[in-house]
Length: 186
Image (cartoon, rainbow, N blue to C red; front, side, top):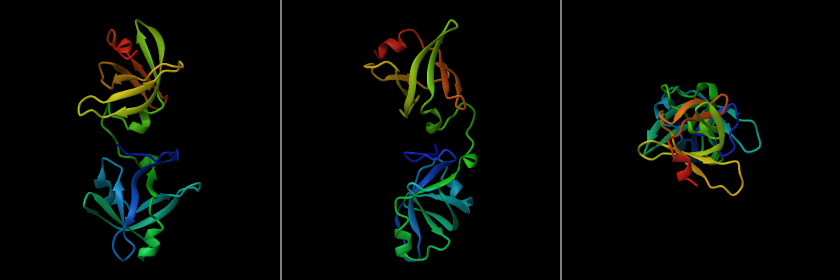
């Protein structure tokens, strides 16, 4: 999964978050926010997200892994002081450059906000919207918040047998739940 910041820019996805300066020549240590850390070795241009500003382009001089993080050396950042000013910034890539996934795999940020519609015998029934996806070590669970007030969250397995159609562009997931699945959550 390639992450996105709390308030993602629609054109970008976050692949790292700068944690601290690393070394004396302007390098920074970054928390990895992607399931594809190998992508860093090919990156030469990224974008840095600053609050209330458009993401700004930044050139990478060098990148290497270190203790579960990536060390990034940006062009023009040559001191501890200038590296310190990058602390907390998200490292972004254009959404069009996200890593391709195999069929029937989705990024969590693509599923959040999707409408969930149950369809049994051709009759659609609006269930709610996906608020999160919980990894379980097995089949992930969709956290779905019903539209009605006072109703509690519904957990739906993200399984092909249940989720018959997922259209992230249209932001809809059509499910055919087994008998009593929706009632279990009430």
